[in-house]
Every structure is written in C-alpha cells, then in structure tokens.
Length: 334
Image (tube, rainbow, N blue to C red):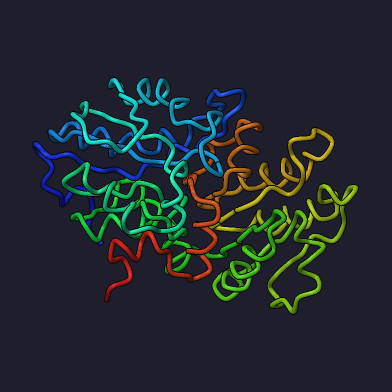
C-alpha cells in the first residue's frame, strides 16, 4: 500500500474518497471532526499542484434525499480547507473546478452494490485515486473496491495514521493494555471482544452488550459490567471496578459509550469511565461516532492521544478482519 506522498500529483487531478459524514441536524453540520480529518491530505495535494474531485457519502439514504445532500457540507468544507469548493450533482462530463465535490455517493445504487461500471464512471474524473476514508473502508462499496482497478491508488495521510495507531494496539502495545468495548451491536462487537481478549490484559464490556455477552462463553480476562441503571447505563459498582483496572493501564483503546449518554441521567457511566481514561497515564485511543460525541459533550476529546474516525472499521481491524478498502490498496499483499 502506497502513501499519497509517493504519488506524482503536479498538474493531475485526484479522485479522493473523503470522509465527510459528520452529524447533521436540520441540514446543518453539527460537528466537523471527520471533515477536518481530510484536510491535511487535501491541502498536501493542492500544495503539490493537483486539482481535486472529492467523493463521499452523508448518512444512509435510500435513493435521493435532499436532507442528506452533500450541498450541506460545502460551506464548512470550504472554510476548513481555505479553498472554494464547487458542488457537482451528476456524473455528466464537463469542465471541473480546482476543487469539486460530487453529490452523495449513495444517491446512486451502484455505490453500495459495488458496481464496477459506477467505479469506472467515478475514476473517469481523475488521474489517480486516494482513499482518505478509514471509517467506511470495511464496506465493499464501489468508491473503495472498484476505482483502484482503473487508477493508480494511494492511501491518504489520515488513513495511514489510523492504521499505524491501531497496529500499536495489535502488535506492540505498552502494557497493561486495557480494551473497553461497549454499545449495543453484539454481532459487530463480539468478534472484536474475542480478538482483543487474546492480546489485551483486560477487556471491559458495558452498554447493552452487558446483557447479551453473558450468554456467550467469554475468556477469563473479559470483565462485564455487573450492575446497571434502568438497563440504560452501567451502575456505580461497575464504574468503580472499571476505574480500578483503567488506573493501572499503559494503553487504552475504547469503542462505545457506557450508556444512553444523550440523556443526562444515563451519562454517569460514560463520564466515570472517560474521567478514569483521561486521568490515567496510558496512551489513549478512542473510536466510533458515539464515543467521539460523548467525549466531545464532556469536553475531553483533546485529552485523547488518537481519535479514530472509524467505528465499525476500527472494530473489524482490531478483530483481525480484512477491510475491503485496504485490500483494494494492496495493504494485505505480502
């Protein structure tokens, strides 16, 4: 897998699979963590003399949905990039601006279908391809798996950083290594729990998972929350037990809030664990939209060493699965 820094970019146009999928409310961007994650790569390309054809998704539309149009992010992307961004709503061939943003990829059925024909259409707008979207690289969408078949392809600066940070956890963590896995999606989180249990000293489990994983045969180093509040947050006994383990950690990786943090009465578990993580001397990695939102709400994001833009992709990477978006770049070759 080659870094974008290995690409010859001057005078060429880059098709960049961006991650612009930040939270939206009333057709406005609420928080722009993901948009900002693209900026170093986009500025690098512009500084080296490239023009940009940006592609991304927003939300999970089924067909065209004006409430999820990429028009919503144009202004804030222009502001963060410091460059005018021109919006393009279709795939007709026409003269492009220095920075062009295409409409929501999921407005076309070919995206989620992994259509090679759709990939070819996207590839026709550039000379080389850059994947700067770790968060959705676990999907087999056309914008990940198909475009590299038609264009020289590279990994963006943030994508490289994501892999490097998560490999620290998998390959050479400072110990004790404590993994915190919470939330509600057992089918996506159980494989990560089991894989992390083989490399972590302790795996702490909270959220809705605490009611489901007890039915599974779990390794001895997995610690499941033992009490709760209305089945919507972990209880004080669990907070205290988790805090004691986190206090001795040298590396912490966390995905998933402890409860329904959006409601103040169910914020205590997430707050208690977050404060323990921040207070510890451990190297701290968090990921997942809800985890980022919760720590943002608590004003603690700047205390974290690495904030991963990935939720599902982070879990699948840590579970040892091959991510299609990385495979398309040749990451797993040799």
